[in-house]
Length: 265
Image: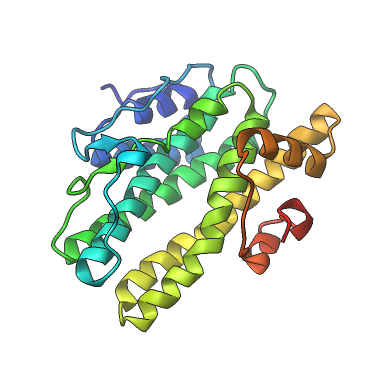
């Protein structure tokens, strides 16, 4: 795989085609810094693959075939960390995919790409932190099976950047804002300060990621003459038919620019 790419979309495709997580992280940082410094100056129009490359492990299963996750003791923490690491690896790819997927069909300002390159860099750090914590516990990413449903969000929203923003940062990542604090509280009660510290970094960054989603969703709605809240409601009903269920983390969602009327909180 050549590293001498000339455009940001070519860089995004190179990351997506990197199967090894270490390569994916290294290229994310390399190309992210090149974009920030001006070494990559052009956005480009390279189209991403339908699916990112994946390492031979973990085994990817349909969500319905995933074994029940242990919730207690060291095994439970390993299972939690492994599941989160898999989410973060997919999140790296989702960030690069939004960079390349819509560049050729939307008129997007440079600041849009700035935001999603930074999201990719953040997600790479998150994966590394979780991988290190797994190693502390005598485990590694790939030791357990993982479900293959995470990329379905990318496939379902490949046709419209507003769909992608509505489903990925504004719905899936926003749910992380709801669920992470209770998880941190349980781990704190069990004396696992190390894992709590990792989750706190992820939680703080995810607020900024949801905020980026909301900001660009509003921007694109204004560009198309749409009402952002009404349009989000309509897209949520179509893309997430089960609907959102509380409890919701109102303060974190508010900090990310998503008032209660947007999610029924």
